[in-house]
Length: 262
Image (tube, rainbow, N blue to C red; front, side, top):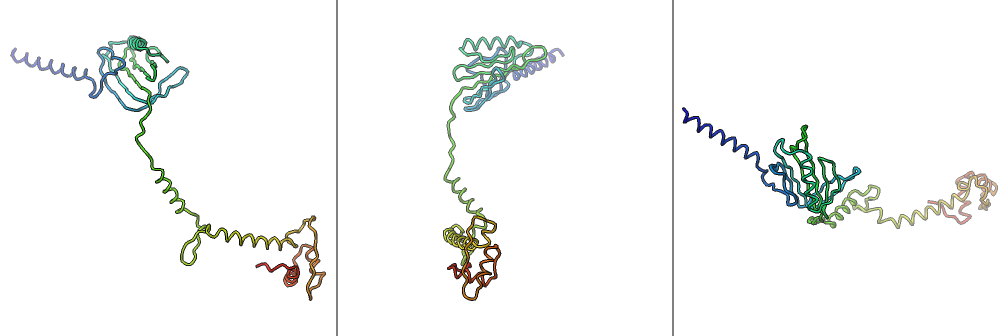
């Protein structure tokens, strides 16, 4: 009986030791920062490394320093109830000063922002109710220019823009003539000449009674009637601003050398 108990006890102890060893291992693919070592007994629970990323580092006066470049993030888990907040804070603070870092912002005993040249460091402690640290994060970003690896085809964008403009052209600019569609822009010069001639004839007619009604500065000119038209009726109609009879008005204009408005 005794011979059976000892092997079982050894198996249980070995199993517990294996579980403890697994828990003490770092996350796969994560390794320590080249800048600062971990606190003894801590393990890496999470990490992120990027060739180019960004982060905002807190500064005094509720300001932030935005940094873009080579990015490294590590999240450490110390042994439970082993390291106090101020103990970890002073260790990292002293190590940064010894490495030549400038301490830009501190909130004791949980936050440190420091930089050395173009490299920025940020510490954030997660403190339990008993004042002991159960996790702390380190962020490290080194400023650098991003490598441009993507290009855009400006010619394609311009071609698509011109095509959309032609497709969405207003309907009033389109005309049907002899079975084919032509734009009104093609007839712009001809339309302008016709419009100018029409406007000239309109202004000529309106310069009589209708266009100058109520204008006291316009000189009244009597129109000599042709044969068969009484001078009094034609002249009085123009002066009063009232249009005379159609036949009389037409004959009066023809007598003045004004062609009929079509």
